[in-house]
Image (tube, rainbow, N blue to C red; front, top):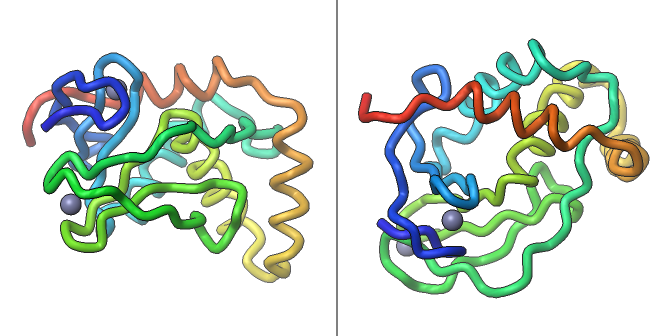
Length: 155
Ligand SMILES: [Zn+2]
Ligand SMILES: [Zn+2]
């Protein structure tokens, strides 16, 4: 399968046992939709060793251009992660896969971790908090954490 962003061959690998495909060039990730929660759980652990989860998370600029499903090559549909309109992912409803651009992956993991941390707060709170968090960020730290959590090779 090819990366929908840069056409490199996707590499099979895993984050702590959660199987994904990753682009060696742009670090985008293709994941099965049913693996999203396990993936976020593992990424959160990986991030937790490198990034203070109370610190700001990366802003998630919308990557321009349509994404085509690496499996069936149909155009993927946009959807907001965890009901936000701040992190926009692309998914194929037919193949149940999600394309995650690298900046989105880090932001998703931090949002997931923080949401789990404060489950009693209201949804709007997260939207506001996410916006606040995006103002100051250490992208490099998040990128390093994600890179260190990925192991290439089939399970
Ligand atoms: Zn790529
Ligand atoms: Zn598809």
